[in-house]
Image 1: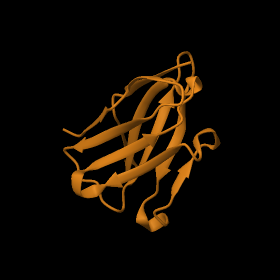
Image 2: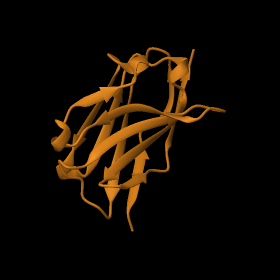
Image 3: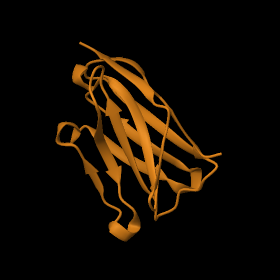
Image 4: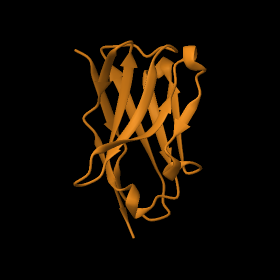
Length: 119
């Protein structure tokens, strides 16, 4: 059974930092796998946060404008893990954060981890 399990969320004050981890189980991350983080704030739709492209697309990282310079996506394929380092957090970053991985046309989602930023 394929699972993506996020962890590392929590409550933090504005200006603080958190690092989210997503571990893949039952499937192997490779350089051909695109991985991403999305978030869903209360009462809103799930939106894109950051992505690490597959090697075939240059392996570059992309971010939504609101997190550029504050968040960094990284991956360790040997550990089957994807990370989202978040710094200088703002109250508007409060959301459930989900990891996402694409294997060809098949996309997997984790169950999410809550991040709450207090002002």
